[in-house]
Image (cartoon, rainbow, N blue to C red; front, side, top):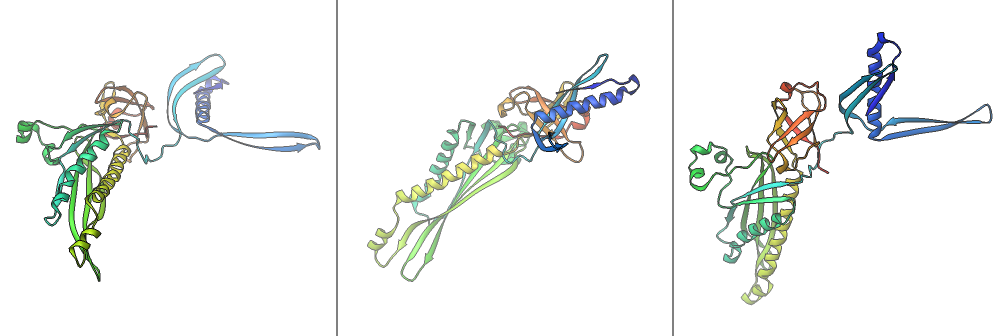
Length: 344
């Protein structure tokens, strides 16, 4: 946006610049939306006057002066501004999600029927297939490796597992998921019968970034009837649910789990720690995580003034940002964590 102010006196050029900057900021705010209030008044009995007040409906979040020009009559200021209201991101709406699925864990009571004790492996396969079908998910199957953040963050040169089975690295901005399925047998007695249930618990733990930071746990529970004990064997067999119905219930709860798990991943805020270099603020996430040039991010904490930054360059696993306000000190921003705005 551009603002102009008439030059009244060379002695008061700073005041003229301030008015031009104010005009530019007002114009930028209006570009983000305007509210118009008006009323009519009658003067001298017959004259009808209309009055309108135009004011911005948005706020200037941050800005930078990109050009200043002076001619004989006017002082002109051109700014680049971020307009709107930055709210806490409820859902990041990540465009690309790289997820490594680690080895699942199964905890099955010995009293669970043999055919039912084999179901967790099939449920994990269903979970993997449901996530794999999502167009914005890229899955890596490491079902041969247990998710142990302490072991995975060790120096790989001194790790026996890394040397013998191959190193696995989850990059910054990417996810690691481990799922545990527990089956317990529960009996409930009534006056005329005893009913047995399989208590099913599916729990997925989500980690993010190369330091395997725990971000969320998704849990679903289900009690599914597996056997009714009646006075006769024939009556018990007749009243008990068949295996197909039990498998259907297990499949349903896993579908719900997959949907909530994928939603939690997509909504996880995208953030990274900045390092100051000559050409800007560098971060270890890039186009592989969905970043594009001109994407906005911000820093907001007690140590650093509110600062909006823009992506000026992206690589596969890295990007370079620059603050809109060039008065911000790179040294002050270095080491700060930057949070990206929601993807549309």
